Length: 117
Image (cartoon, rainbow, N blue to C red; front, top):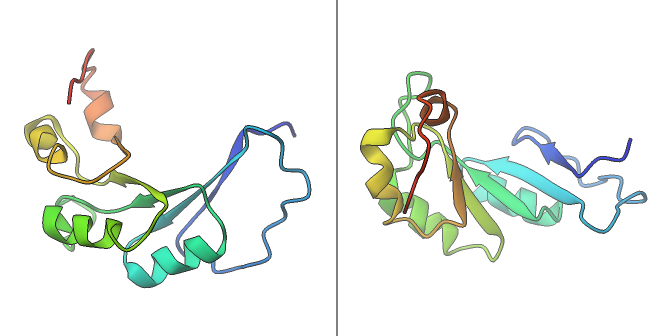
């Protein structure tokens, strides 16, 4: 299929991920919500972990916040990307996070041209 990578959701606990066709710039992405799921993604040998939700969202009333997010990031050597509830009003809080990057649907729907952190 000539893919650049695959996404492994947090509910996927399978350790037998098929690596036989892994090409040079192929990335494994996984999502996690707590330390148990982070360890699972490490065993699945993902390259990046999406850790969410960082801020309060409409769908989830349970969120990590900056302190808990940073404490979870310290417990892994994988590159962690934050997502969940990121809006223009809380972009400055991302500067407080020990994160490799961030992702947001609602932020980009606002058609923001340039984000400088």
